[in-house]
Length: 422
Ligand code: GDP
Ligand code: IMO
Ligand code: MG
Image 1 (tube, rainbow, N blue to C red):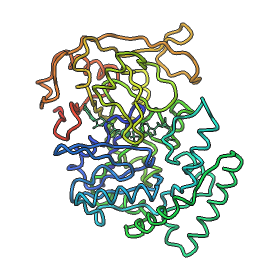
Image 2: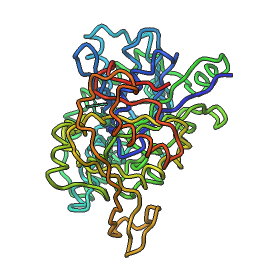
Image 3: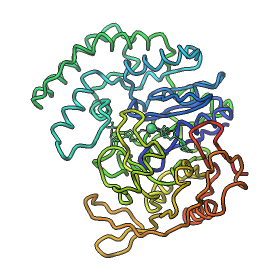
Image 4: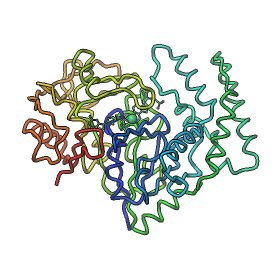
């Protein structure tokens, strides 16, 4: 029996999942996305070209690897068709290497309008959604109104589409939101035609048969644990379970099939969109991180908020996911920082705590521990024995505090800029 390893983000997304999945793919037969949708932007770089994937798993650049979009994912046919076309232009043949679950839900043009209407109605309290229609699509899924990929094969698909669209129009009228859904319909149905050319499958059977055959499967998370619908800073979260358990429901595999859980985190923190961020640096230091780390959303281009590493939040994410190996990315961004801080506790109402408070409006004052910066350009380093002592002290402190080994250190966006520790 094989196991399914899971790689997921431990912060607020954009930890570098795409890059590391691409690096690990040669060890796997299958890469499977299990939740989220085109709100994700997963970047990978090789041969000096940067690719950004939104719905397609990050294994696509390795011939021979199968890429699966699981039932837990929500798909916008317009965006998926776009992604497929750009990959085909690069010579990536997806007809053989991409399979899509029939049970994945479809994002309609009206879901995107509903997302925009809901955000506009919230005003200052908006989530800062990527406006890809994620929330409304998952609402229709749990509300038992959604359209699934398998429905596109039914003779009355168009009727089902119109029924749901009209329902959405009613809601948009209540929002008093003027929209033009029809302008996107032609492209959307073209996207549906593209989807029809792919292998639409009962992916739960497929995954379990891979497990039985002893094939190696890597489940690729999207977003991050602190954006999880249950455990993130609700309501400033996404609408799916981004944690490890989401891989079981999002792929149809049993918990005992879970193997390694790779938890990926940046050497500092970023967050895009609204919501609490205790270690945020709304100052020159944060700006320096943004500039050096090129911290702009891969999906929306919005500047990412930046701040110090938050161990209280990191430990929480490790607990929720049962992380067995840590992967640290982007320490190279801190190469020119003389002092590096890490939040080791929070002070809430004058009391020190190592827990995240329930009420997200509670003011949190981080308790920091300071580290000496390494002040060395580490981007070309190939082995951890080359890494400066100050950086290793930082890594060892994180390992000590979390009780989990840091197995990979990524020192640049390129595939080659990756140190796997023995
Ligand atoms: P994902 O959503 O988790 O896949 O992450 P994103 O692709 O949205 O954001 C990560 C960004 O950091 C991308 O621009 C990557 O190219 C880049 N990146 C990944 N790892 C490293 C690293 O170790 N160092 C640097 N400097 N950049 C990295
Ligand atoms: P990857 O997979 C970072 C954020 C949005 C917003 C909140 C809800 O690239 O790490 P949504 O569109 O889901 O309704 O937005 O979640 N968000 C992300 N932030 N990386 C992502 O994905 C994100 N996907 C959603 O900015 O705050
Ligand atoms: Mg991203």
